[in-house]
Image (cartoon, rainbow, N blue to C red; front, side, top):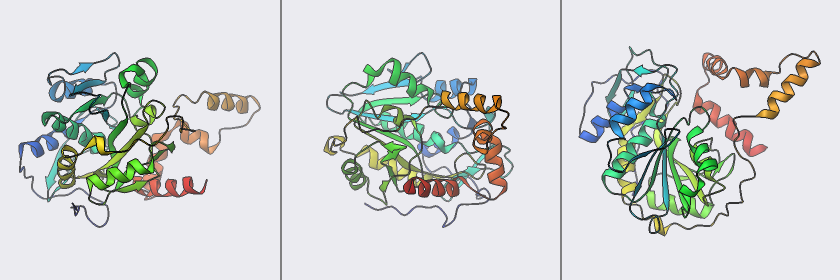
Length: 334
């Protein structure tokens, strides 16, 4: 099955401006979900979860705010479905969005820092998969945007939760084509990724240029961990937009997925590079440099001031997609 995305040939530079239309209750819900701004650790996250997740029968809330639900037998369907409940908004609250022509974006009058499709569309996909009784372990992770704290807690404190899980599939990737095989290091086998791409159809293919999402914290526990495109672009920016038509198409493909037809080929020891947001060694190196009278390096300044660095890049006309493309090329060469 193929899919022709509704997105423009180039990323939009201003919000989509057609009048809102709501074709189904599910699409109305997806649009409404995007009216909330949910920085990690805020009441806005709790309110969002209370509205969309906590009323689902059997939903469990753990110590750090992860929402967890098992549907069916994990012995028969050993898959983890992954998304996260926080967004990268700078402030909590609500925002005005606009939907038309299959695309969702911030309204032109909105002052919000981003749309938040990362990872609101992932939450929406999983909620609707639950409603349609798609089996698996569903984890709506807390605090992904500030270091993957929810998944880090599970991986380190309650790893038994993932016993027997063979596949971890996150819904937290831009575009419409990626099945991530590397998040820093290899996270899933090419054979698994090819088989998943074949089942999903569309334009899906292997992508070695993944960045962090929660499944990266599980690569030492689960053999096949990936992250797949869900249709958003320009993540973390005011120009972010979502191809709603693609998200709706993807939901149907996921509900038809035969998870047990996917191979398990990767060894969990194949993860030579892990993500560590603490970076204790960096602080020690900076202290040593300061003691010797040296000022901070450019890398130090970017590390300590990521929002300012992002603003500078945006003012220079560099989008998140541009940066990701350069980063992918750099990783391939190094």
